[in-house]
Length: 360
Image (cartoon, rainbow, N blue to C red; front, side, top):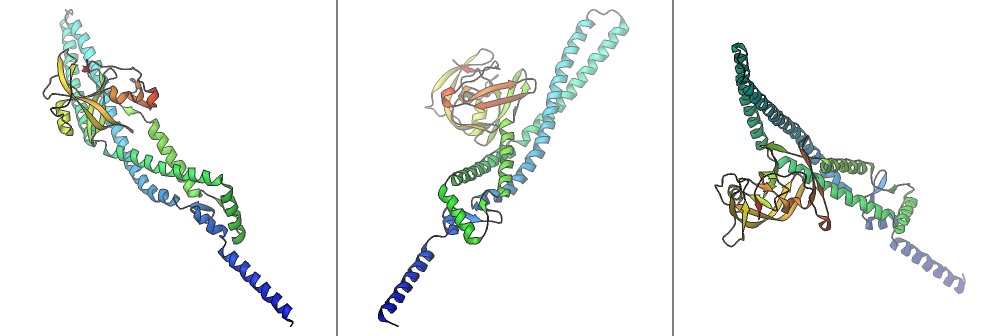
């Protein structure tokens, strides 16, 4: 072999070695996909973040099962309370009508018949009110821990799923990702596409449905003495408050504030307020860390705290909370609907009011 030929062979060998080395060092399609957080599954290249959503979904299913069971019980109690209110109102009205008739009737038999009916109504009214009280107490004992947990868990997991879905959309719009998938498919002789996986897509749709149900769900109202009350969560404790769009701020009784451990200090501002009976009182203004009604939470809520032992005083859900929403009241269904509004558009639709204390 000539010297020149030997040099050519050595040169070719070096070129081949350099090409092989470059090929080994160059990122393959699958390696590039790992850089995007994608790994191959049986049907697609999927994000590892899918696993976090799918892992937590069975736990949410268990919470939903308990939530649905409790919701059925709650509706049963609420139906009893509503039925009792309607029955008592109608029975009292009938009793008053019979009382008027009794004052003018002269026939003894008719008189006795009316008296028997009036007495029967009083007994039934007493029984109905006892049933209502029992239902109200049972409903109060249920608290709001499970509904709050369910709402929070759905929103948190749906937020995760939406983030993964958004990430997939960003990857799908990236030409480099498409090129890496084509390269990986060619190297492995596969035809996998960019995810999501079928399992994740099903989970994301399910979570979206759960969230939609939550957002469409109405807040139950209870009518007592002509005013509507709602269960409000403050500092992890449930407080029954009168819904009052006419009140300028959230108001707590001194007893409620003590229970919640938010009693005002000597340096907190003092305001004058008028009770439902017209009496003017003094209250102190504090800031509550958060106030929650259903799935809606408002932070740093201005609140007036009245003194303890005031007759006619009641906790109010006023506009320092309600002004963050459009408020719609369905009196016939006994439901409250809140719609969040942007800070620049904050308003409250005055669909219901109640005679209650308010800042002067």
